[in-house]
Image (cartoon, rainbow, N blue to C red):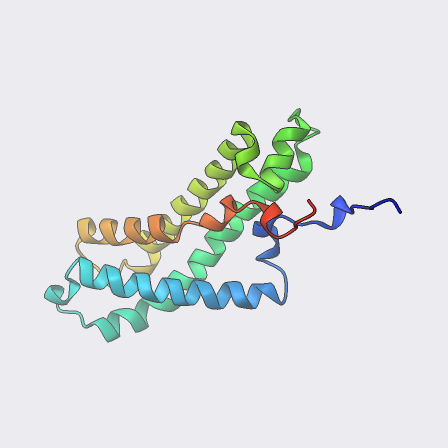
Length: 171
């Protein structure tokens, strides 16, 4: 009997992170990671010296860091989605769009596109936290910059780099 593969129903890992019920796992995981990073940033940059307590800092920042981080990840995913579905029409070879969708490490241009989307997400994480989340919490601009940059680097959507073939053995 001939084996049939349904490539049209295989979604990239980064794409699946935004669909129910996986989105709930993604949101929970992001919340836990963001919580740990906020605590680490508070400790690392000795923010207690600046007259703010960890509990207050955490309560006043976690929801914004979490939601803005998810929004930034979504922006990066939209870039990858658009590149993946319109790649042919803008002249990208199949190997590149396939790399973007299924295995970034299979083609250098695909890897570059995925890294670009990650950097855009990271940039938005930084902007959101610097200009919105921490603007009233951290008055010192240099400290706010370091805190926002640290969170952006640590919470950039690293999952965009995961090859989909890790989930699909026959792919």
